[in-house]
Length: 113
Image 1 (cartoon, rainbow, N blue to C red):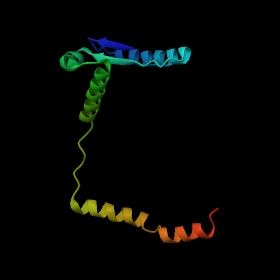
Image 2: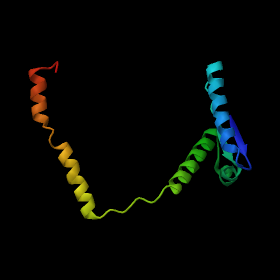
Image 3: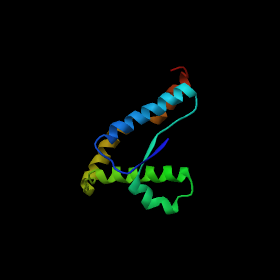
């Protein structure tokens, strides 16, 4: 089920949640897979000339949402070379105590172990 949405007011997130639940209920009741997708009017208008299929529309909406999410996240903190090398050294301390040769010998001696 695809809903074109012109105005996203404060009730829209609750309506979206209910539509997703409806799709899940319809899937359970019918045995046919239902899903819900809200397409905001501005997204549709911006991308409509290039759309050739419903699948293309779904891909566009997913990409727009992904880009919106990424923009909402803080920039990753830049780390200095020294910080990166220290993190790598710390990781080696955890990983290196594992002796792969000894583990192979142990498994060969007792495969049930």
